[in-house]
Image (cartoon, rainbow over all chains, first blue to last red; front, side):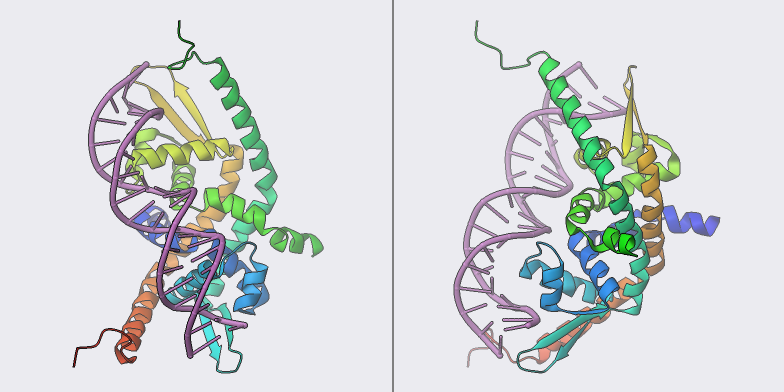
Length: 138
Length: 138
DNA sequence: CGGTATCCATTTGGATACTG
DNA sequence: CAGTATCCAAATGGATACCG
């Protein structure tokens, strides 16, 4: 219990640190894709991940490689071939990422709905509230 | 299998959408804290979450509320009291978030180490590579 | 093919001051 | 206490062009 508690609430700093890397959407996408497909080339990843720019994919892969989550293999051919896959540590990240992925698939619609309700309420409140600054002169 | 596969790889768009909200570190922190503590006031959250500014905490809470993950209760007292807690949907997010949290606690050090190794290698490479622009005149 | 380099618009987020 | 409002610096990220 004490150990569990420690590992859970001890330092937000570690969470911040790690989340800044693996919490952004491109990283989650890359880990998700590599986890499911095993090994992928740069442009395969680019095609699979909807809307990622070359720049962002490069940066994301470099950061994941730096953190020891993704391995990069260069084949000195012409044209060049570079393959990416998860490291052993990267594979352990697969499970939590998958959990998040499944949660998202399950609750996305509810979130959309919640937003609509919230926004509708907001607009209503805005319409009802007494004008604060802008009222017709006179 | 088909269902599983669909829910996993179908739309990156849903992942992007949701991750943009619950993937940022402050949201994860808030959900983590509320999940473990049940109900918290604004300044309690602020104290618990290391380094969050008032502005970011407000924004994060509004977004989570908008998405139906956090509920906000105002007690019309003086001084004002506002309590936050997870909604039912928010509670379901607890599990994946906890998984991520535990993963982080377990692997943070390995990541730190991996970074050091990577950076050391980088510096070495930078030192070895032929000077491209800046070399001593003469 | 798999990048790097550069430019630039937008977003993010901290600091600060003020309010009900 | 629990915000809102404003300002401004820094980070983010797309578009584009070029390179080995």
